[in-house]
Length: 273
Image 1 (cartoon, rainbow, N blue to C red):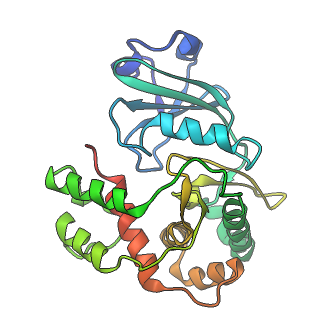
Image 2: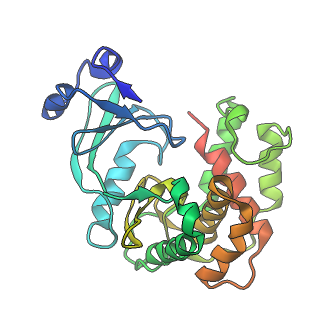
């Protein structure tokens, strides 16, 4: 999808001077994969993210900027070309990581290789030394924020990606509380480990990079496993999930814990307070 300069006019006013040369680029290709609620464009040699002011942490761009700065040299992540904001919008311009998203249908030709690469990417993330990480994602504040957003009517039930069986946001939240784990296995996590966020060199069969870091931080590593399993089933087939867990090194997994984090992900991505 290509957007013309006229279509960009809705947020062009107040556009940062450092990014003005981008407005002269003929093609702005809109990225439609994802659920962030922001505009993302492939333009020139990078990706420009534009988010309205006032988004919740994780959806705002300053949160991602801070995590990318900390991750530099620790993981293959995009380089920050520019970050800035005005009264209405935040702007984050990032380098492009060359390669193919792990959700690309061409990976169906060699699913075992894809599974091995996804497990490798999970291990790369979870092996990051957590003790010095300044970003934490404790469950209780997240649950409280979700409950507040439900009370305000800010959650769009129609946009849930997991099977909600006709449940209202409040009913889903009550289900979430019933599944709350008694303990957590903490490590550094991506926070949104879905296949479009894993960039792969198809020819060399290697991980080129990981993108979309707004939710990165210390959390239960099952949160990444839950996202990876859901995304693998959504993009390919759920029959590959046992292979992924085995490649990661797990003989079995607590399905209730995975369901909890998949519910948490759905409720967390759709509040706009």
